[in-house]
Length: 324
Image 1 (cartoon, one colour):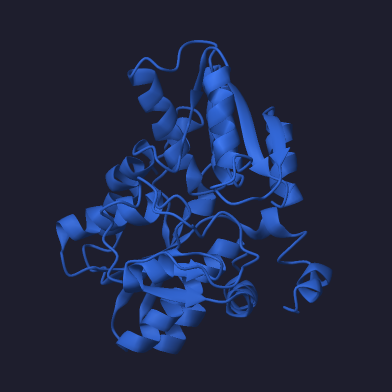
Image 2 (spheres, helix red, strand yellow; image 1 turned 90 degrees about the horizontal axis):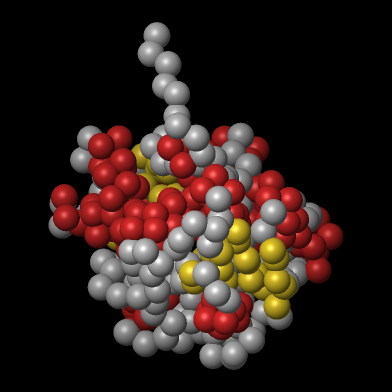
């Protein structure tokens, strides 16, 4: 039997399996497949972008030995960056909205990141976590700003790894790519690769309420309606990673449907998933019902539910939001 030995943390990123979501696939007659990104060593899809951001900064000479990586993040990119910083001898400073789950914040601290909590305010506000991280990077010697939202290393990571893996594992049979957007890197990079292999692959945005991407795809204008308890997805602007993305359609999912799907796949499939996965799977389920039987739909299982036990798996929190 062949035994694979990975060379450290970074060599263990990627090549995650596709998991058939049996409950949803059996009900719809479609193959609904989830890319198991929670199996990356840092626990999320963001490990891919974090690795490319750091390696590209090194190649360009911007990140030097003993340097500091600074980023504004909802958590997972910061976790991935900090793991890689530890492995490569850098320090990390992570600016995160105080509304994010305590599990992600404590994980960052445990990993050794310097964590700066800021109020959750829109991007236009100078106190926004992304704007604060940029300002800190400009003020800090021997540092780089990861800039995941507008750094195309993010999108390229998925064009070069996630997309090819999906194409190979489905033997080119993928009909639809469905994913939510935060930075847009995962959706855009993967979609661009799949379109390069087959223009007929449909790329569909899964969007929570409180985000403007649904309206952008539908009308070409950003319009925000409602709000969502999900973290790390949704956006009120078009990032550099989203520019030129292949978005054929968009589906908007409310929190009640997100929670319903998360509980369904937990009880029926044994999958304990994070909030963005509920949006992704709910949208994939809707696509499957619209298209009818016989299609292969691929989405992303971004991270596990363990980072959200205090929120989306907490009955008291859900009750306070009218979602129990």
